[in-house]
Image (cartoon, rainbow, N blue to C red; front, side, top):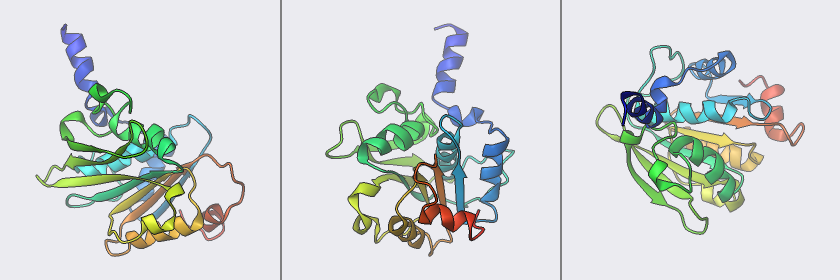
Length: 213
């Protein structure tokens, strides 16, 4: 390998070190310092899922960038990263966090650095989907990111105590409120990143009409 190829390969496995949010993403991250609930609503291919995935990676690793002005956790965290179905969770949150689902050799090229992934547990029923990943935290402990889907129903969202939940695409109101409950004990955070397809739903109205940001 040439020096350039070596550098590119290292960068691919540590994308977190090079993450520089554009102003809208930066505003979203910064708002976490004051607000437990945040919504990043934008059109397709505008970086909202990217922002959600990198924020989860930052909290899971404890590698807060110099520019970070958002919420901080002192130690390892437990997260749920979720989507509408098992397939969409695999193709969006899992892909952003870990890397291409179908190419295990490239796991570690997502927002979570390759050398920070301790283990990756495969899920049942959905090809190439992960159930969870264990992530090395800068304190020496370990964070956990579990992948969930809305299609499993509210019952599958009960029981855990979490530091944060990332909803990629709009969840039903009952699952959203159940997710909020999971973070109450830690004072944790809830993020939604999505393209508005359902109109003025109950979840969207919660933010736009009640002033939650």
